[in-house]
Length: 161
Image (cartoon, rainbow, N blue to C red; front, side, top):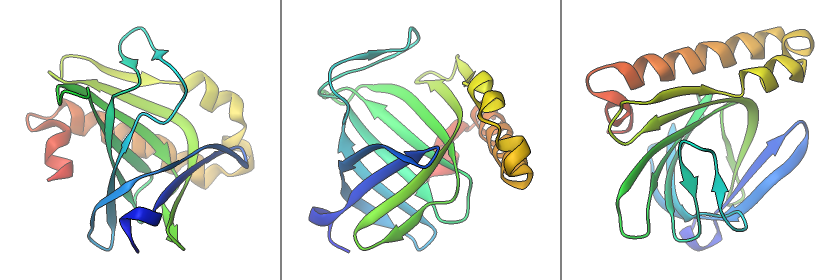
């Protein structure tokens, strides 16, 4: 796998949500880490953080875990925090990281003072609990595990070291 040909493809409800190029940072066999600039058009202001052109994401995907953790920094290298997506385990094939978004998210501010569970209403409305109860249970467990890790003294950095 070459860093020049690596692409992240995030799907949601069976459709490609976003696809973008990324540079390989490391691949342990279970966790694959990449770096990519903010891939969406313009600014996305969530109220608690703004993602904008120039931001750099170091993204960690696992082949065996139901989440992805994205460290977000400004173009100058200042840590904004971590955006965590609850996903099915990543599939890496033919230079692509394929990830299915399951709606649940977690935001952790750079200083760890804010740990925000996001999109629980979207998850409930998705119908996953009815269509795939096992996946829904894994998703809830993943969000709980990420929140617990974020609140632990070592925070998310312990998960990524």
